[in-house]
Image (cartoon, rainbow, N blue to C red; front, side, top):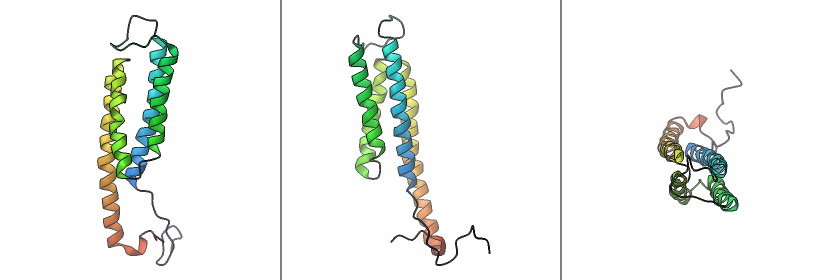
Length: 146
């Protein structure tokens, strides 16, 4: 018998839900995206080109707005274990898209992250459902929840 395969009666560590892993990863990456978009907005603050209709002329205002949004996304990435976390994460997609008013390219990049968020929610739920079905069909290899 291979030691890599669990044996009946072995204690198997419970898995972290896939939806939590996926949504947390998307929000963490979005937090980094916002930091880089803040750098772009800071660099373009004195340039008449490449700016959106919403303009921040103060470097402090740019960093406070960008830093606050990045921090909120980072905090939300640790709160995705419940329905409230998913709702808050979904609402947080709006200001990320809204960054397109400051840096127009963020409409596209933020849109990509909105698609990733939706995919993380759908695929995470599906994987968790399929894991539960498999564990019900194979209780000898199911994680022990104690």
